[in-house]
Image (cartoon, rainbow, N blue to C red; front, side, top):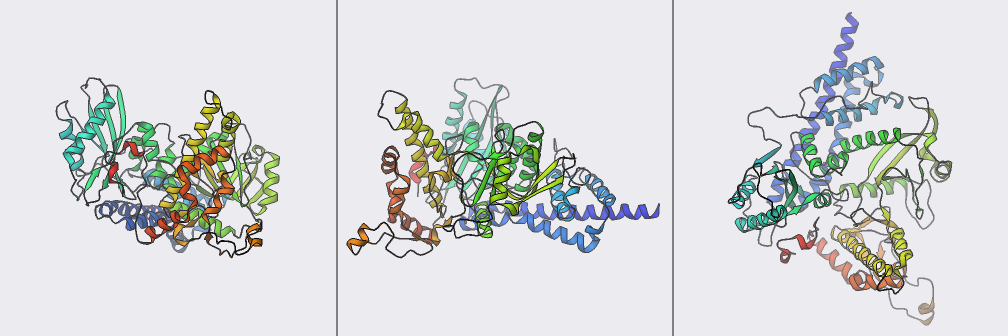
Length: 607
């Protein structure tokens, strides 16, 4: 019995060291998130952007620290598997009263999978399934802040209650006219209720953590009346005189989905019990997967865990096969999908055509840049995985042949999984939300008659559809410019259309910072031979960009050209790009709002 007791003590000590590593991670994560309030109050926009970027690195640093400690103190990689089974059991016991058990389980997986061989990635050794419930977790300390607060106004004091609700967040910057803005919010809320009588349960609930991102602060909650619930968010901004204003009142699931979009930077919010925030937000946005809500809250590793569990569940309950994704094939990325699953899988190819002067490491650095940058609603977030196993019988043979041809280093076939099936292991893959490629979207509109002069029929509708999406395309580029991003390759095929009709960029291998580019006019030809030449007669540096040359590649269709030139002709003018570049270099941080201009209370305050 003595050796068994020693084994049990060793397993407990390893489990305790792993939980210590997680607790340190979440303490630092939460501290950085809480500091966002001070940065907002002091209008430290560059500091806010740095913190949003740096916080993403916290998790991997803590996992590395913890795995190094386990190797150093416990020779973890040399321990037998019965010890590792005990480690998991002890770890579960340590999570009984923990406030972030689901995050701690994911941290356990991250550390353990660095040590164990992938053949042990089973529920006996890691958390393939969650073991600790996250329902009804409460902080029992007397002074603990609840997840949300409830206010109970009457028909005669809604404005006064709204003023108190906002003051309870203790923002240390005065509002310009809080009572007047509370009246605007009251009017917007009551208009949502229409003529409905205020019921006995009429209340306003708000999450107690403020949501910070870039230059904005958001109060998020629900309006409840009888059997009806209305999700809402109140954006709070600095105005030109250094005071605060409530910029809009956003209502309903669609507005909240845009605010929490997968194409936007992660929020910074101070949460003691993140699962309670996720549960509350999911009640407001039932169509949004839980993994995307965790991502939006900055808990991307938990988002990855939930996504993978959902993916395995989908595989078990579907029979279709992975295929080469439809559309124009990329030169550096190989893309495949599962038709029944709303995501695409992207591999970096092993070799590229001569015009693509890049490497695998450069491409990975571009994807990391996007992960860390403000995506302003125009760049899709990606989930990055290593060593992902798939059943071989779920792959079309053409897809396997495509990977063997273009990315053989990323493919491993032959081992059997826990169920005895032949396994395909993809060594490195990015996963993104599936969108309709913009070139396909436009082609479908053309096919519907968009290029024909038929003002009374389907063609007129198609032309309107084309104009709307071309406007969105130009707006997407301008939002990226405001975020200091030059897309590099602006062809239609590199953009997608979301279910909300937003145009989003998703091909990152050529992106650059606007401030690193050299925007130039095309020099005038010096001779008749140069003027008639089909070749470039002037020197072009590696980061030279000539905006006036975009037109021939983008505007071959007259319907598209008319819409583009009507709304976005400035994108072909070098002065547009140079002007934004100069402002960014001067330290200006542009406003890019996650809601339409017509929702704003004070649109005249645009800076």
